[in-house]
Length: 293
Ligand code: PYC
Image (cartoon, rainbow, N blue to C red):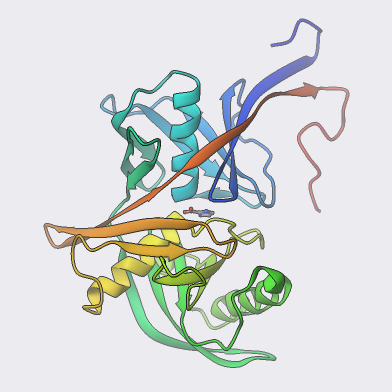
């Protein structure tokens, strides 16, 4: 709490993982923080499981995320910057389960994600203005609709039309009652195409729940993709999959099968790029952001 009456501050540390921003609230976090469109927030919480280094709730402008791959990489880079985390593996509690993040001597961070799987294959929806679109419903810590066949160009200069297209798909899924398991809302749409880099296996465009696009290759989306590839016999256990995102950054990933479940791991790098304090002045009517009615 700041010295001045009615004014409090919260400390945030920003990083980006392959271009996608993460803002970790390291001090002064409220119960339900305001969110941002492109920036994924990460509220640090004490873990309920004592074997975990930290608990975290990822959130954006419309709600919270089950898990966030790029955000977990950003969180680990932030905790390392604060000298709160040593190299090696760390269990991190998320709303959808415990993941294990490892800070490697190279500075890269890998995240062994929650089990991932395809829920429905080849689901076709009618997308007004675009026609019939077919994709798979898969879980990678969030629900995704994965589309290979779409006729769109996955270039950064096309993010406006890509956003419109993916948003129309999301609305069509909702209209036609297509959901994940237990009626889980499909709030991420992922389009795939050929990579630009000779080092990558695939390129993607991922639309996030608040209509922002993921600047990184999306850790949970890459997990969902790898689970589908494994189920199709197109990705062997332990084989590296290199997923390029829309800005050209790459996550490496692989899957392991344990006890009949598919566990994806993704690996990437995050850079801390600010260490700031927010001022929350109770006289400021917008100190918690602007709410739409
Ligand atoms: O990396 O899993 C991810 C993610 C989800 C939403 C934005 N990034």
